[in-house]
Amino acid sequence: MRVNEIIELFQSKGVKATPQRISVYEALLSLKHPSAEAVLERVRSILPTVTVATVYNTLDCFAKAGVIERVLTVDNKMYFDTNLSRHYHLYSEETHEIQDFYDNELSELIRTFIQNRKIPGFELKDVKVQLIGNIENY
Ligand SMILES: [Zn+2]
Image (cartoon, rainbow, N blue to C red):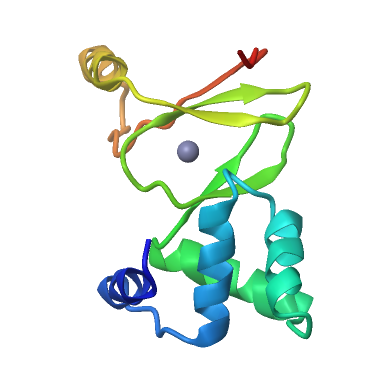
């Protein structure tokens, strides 16, 4: 993703582009589902003077504006995702690795299932699925 595309994304989400924010977003892009600590470490390798608060506030700002998504795992660890397209996550509790998993059928299956159940007082807005297991890398 080029810098002008990042600026366009920020604009579309109402986020003001600053050099530090661009650096944080570039760090997020270069890492797959990173933790805040991993983002901080990556940004600091480029901007050594950046503060912890700046990076954490930027991540918070991005998540609130919908520039990125927060991913909370079953063992209560927080990661960040720049991939805003509909997808699910495969999560390894052992290695804390998260992999993207695409399946349109699964989404429709869950939507239809929940709508047919007619849960009183519940309106389904989104489906987020995290599958927990072991990830073998080939
Ligand atoms: Zn993802």
